[in-house]
Image (tube, rainbow, N blue to C red):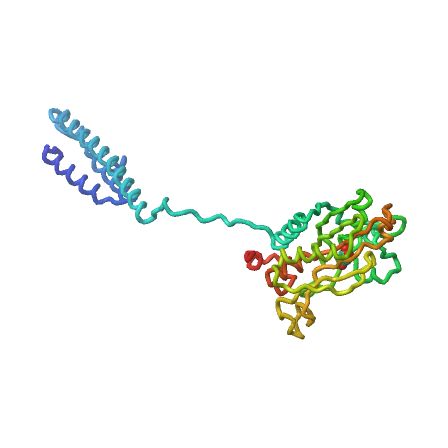
Length: 351
Ligand code: DAH
């Protein structure tokens, strides 16, 4: 078989036209096998046929065939490259990544509403000259009860179903999760000399049946001021000022007489119910009373003053214990205290 120069040309046209029709990797591979395949490629066969050529024509034939092979290999490389570029180009429109889009905002955390309220209360008392101290959450029964005049057989112990630490000391359970911050009145007076003006913020625990205004864990601030000549009017002044700062001047405040073993006289301070405004006999938030109690207070019992080594003939003092969750309820008009510790972000995000 002899192949003329024009036949080489026709072959080249044919091959290049076929290559132009290949639009993907599979098409390119099919074309490569058809033309350059080692076994049966059209060009491979042509090259093999060199020796069949008349001797005189062999060199020219061989050169032309080799030239064509190189041209086709080069064309294949170019086509591959072109297809790769096309595919990339297509990606920028179909699978476009818009780097100018603003990023997704990071969700910012915030302080729990009870923490916010606690801090605001601390701030209010700090401005009136009260210093912050802290005491242990796991407390001795001796401090939690006895030191504040709640002896073993006293009915006041029954007010709290205590969460005891299950460790026996001398055959008895003597440690508990403190039921109130009041033991710190004694702890502070044992360490300091008058004048004393402190607040003690912290968590307290009671094994209580929960309802709209009771949780088994609560946050309190204990306040204590002891000096010469401290009177009930000082207590009222401090608490009025506190209430004015937290709730504004319009809210109604009432003091009820009350009993706490560690003060004499004792009172409870309540704020008018924001839910029913005193009109709802069936209101579950104020239990129909129209008032929500937020703290207990009173004049420190003289026996306690003397027990810590002060002289009750000289020193008098007032103490109060404030429920922070109650303050938060009133502040934001929340109907149920149990919301605070259910960790529902839909609730927590509102503060
Ligand atoms: N410790 C009391 C309680 O948790 C609250 C209390 C009442 C604290 C009267 C006081 C006080 O300091 O004077 O219920």
